Image 1 (cartoon, rainbow, N blue to C red):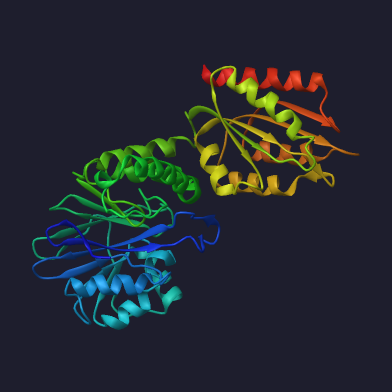
Image 2 (cartoon, rainbow, N blue to C red):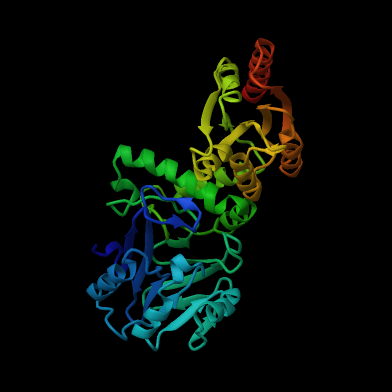
Length: 402
């Protein structure tokens, strides 16, 4: 890859990561992910904003791009660390070895993390909220934006060019051949939309209140470009991704999209036998239904759809007096991600004894779900069960539609 020019003296140095591994050891990345770092060359000083994990040859790819920018061994003045997660800092030791006199700038809370993660204490300095750094014709300003999504997170703004280096905020999954939003094809933009929402739901959703605070803090800036650490760089519509994240953040408390996500599991087909009645009831009101089976569908994709939906239907059988284990895992992910307040139905079969509902009720209480009904039956569903399921789903969809 060659560095991408964002403005005079400003470049993206990036690495494309494949789909072999799970992001954060949890989330599938079937189309990979971008790792973006940025170089700014002022007339007096040069700076590298964020780094990469040495993952799928990422460090070699970035090294080659740095050298093409005449940043060979020793020729780098500053490293700015916006966020300490290892996908942005994993190559820190090797980078410091290559540039032994480089000054590392970060938030106050990141100083100790650098020490404990990488045993580096020399030339590390905390910057203050609002502090500026003159590189010679290029001025950086630092803004503390904690808990988007670690406590030490900050963002860096290049004042002359209006470029916001936002790290994990405003990012997305996926690999993209072209750097900028306005270079993507229509097909790529559709994919980008899905991978942006999945990235938000998987990585950032738990911290939505902090996202809203962070966006409010940026209100006074003349942002012309948003340059995140994952995904594309937004130059034609920088406010689009900011407003998009704001909308995604509001899904925590609502309002959300007038849609229903149906998540279901079935052991021998008896729970599945009621699924069509549920889906037909929802669609009879013209409401979109996202229907996802687990464990066949990874919780990453379930969370993406549930996060945006006002309605949630959980279908699963009892398994040894408790919830079907794959559904327990999915609900645990939803609870950890602060999915709350959805209008909810639950259906499912049991064999010799029930028990799933009791465990589900614990999740419903913790997640503050607005439960609209339960259809639970022994063995296979009766025609009366199917009719009840249809009517409950229809009523919930009608309420969601408003």
